Image (cartoon, rainbow, N blue to C red; front, side, top):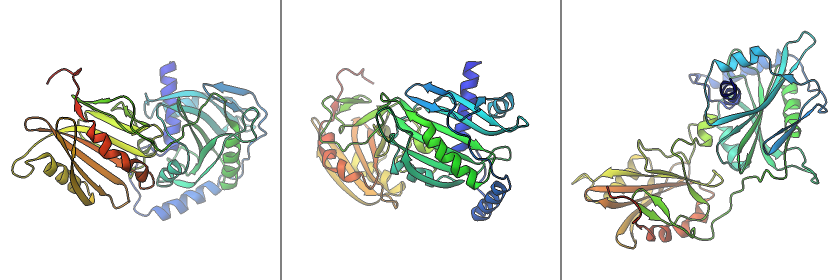
Length: 383
């Protein structure tokens, strides 16, 4: 029951974040106008004072509104019918009801197993999500001894289905996961704005929360990272992530996540530790003479078919072999690096990295030095 309950209430957050599968409307502007009209028809429902009980959940606490009652069975049943999200954990929730006992507002706190700096980069991703009315960075409720809490991202969203209501979501990226406080409101836009402000005050990270923050690398990591049967030293703050771990774009339904690079069977996936600057993977491919007879040819073709333009090709001397490096940019300014080397006769290992336009200058000085550290991993078993 607890597992089902956790998955079910994780669904609430996914609904608000735009993950529910739905066809893209032919006329988004008209659809949005109709959605706003339907929101306004709900009337005003403002939040009660924030003087209810305190809920301590992992590294955040909630100052709940007055009269916030445990989630009712209809709320549970509605979300239980949708999706099962094993990457999320339900931390708490409650309903605000009217005099007739009908739920007018639902508050749910979820922690997702991912790292993300909740600042302007996360806000930019949310702005691309269908159904988003507004997105802004702000601060959470104050912690002990501080006038302001840490930076968070607040979004307001139209209903995602016939049974859902307008919603406000507050995102807080901490070292132990991405916390999302989701509030669904049966009210008009004025009500939604008021509940959004209340939500940012309700969420209060504890002093031990340790917010995620991106820092520019100053060098390579002291130890090497295994990439298949080889190893290399990555720039500081870059790490391997499990292949199944979702990105923020996957979570919010953003189809244009600049850091989302995919191959069918990656050897490894990479990400910067704040989730906002670098994404990448390593995979194997076969040489195809005469079309792609060398690692350099293969890397160049790979870049071309993926829409990377303005490419430049060079060879970087590693410890025991040369690595072909191809650089270029996508139309959105994302910088991509394709590094390829022949790992076994006729087979190439390709390391593909994508950097956001704003963060690329911080990583550029370390790419050649990183590739120069490539060498066979003697600890790895042979093919």
